Length: 253
Image (cartoon, rainbow, N blue to C red; front, side, top):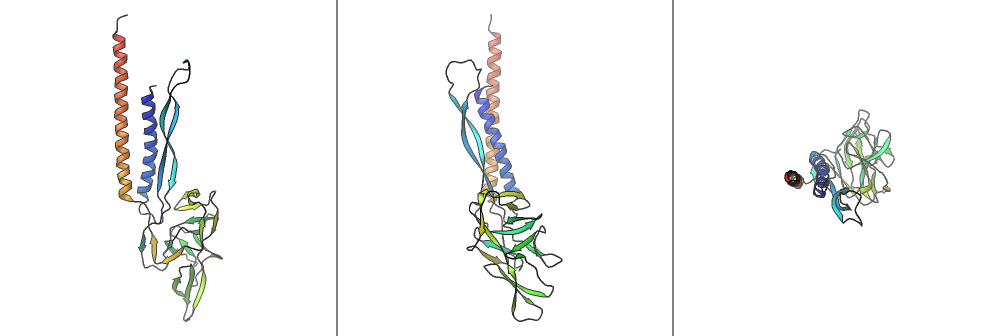
């Protein structure tokens, strides 16, 4: 197989995987707290296509390789909801939640109350406080969440605040090492966690996705154009190869 075809094919393969990453970003442009992913590419040098009967070493050919993806952990825009159970983190921390019996992490602060008064995510996972799940009483009202995560309420006809817990916020030494688990949840992976003391909570706000929809759509168009251009180039190379074979076949013996 000709080297030009191999190089073009390697680029098409990386473009296909890049399109998958972009499509996932676009699909989650309206997902609360979603963090966009981006592709990383590098040059991959290898020997060219040949029969193993040449003397000496062949000149190496430059292929394209997608080395992986990296996560943009930048802050997404804040949207006011005026819902006292909605919370957005200003900083690098994550909410700690209990999902399927394990501790998971999310930036989605769209919370609600369960039938038993427990604070939970929109998917039904319990939101964890520093002392366990946050639980409200049936007579609680006027819920207030301070910037440090302390949750207070007025109970019944009481005039003084009652504390219901403190939202647990955790941070990681390298957020890029967090493992995506689906449903807007992360696992700690190989990242080391610690209690966050710098981030603050904003009650009545939701952090939106940090995906730049216009930028992602522009990249999608670029990928499609590049894929088409390479397909045309590969077709031209194939036609030249076919034409050369046909002409060689016509040469008289």
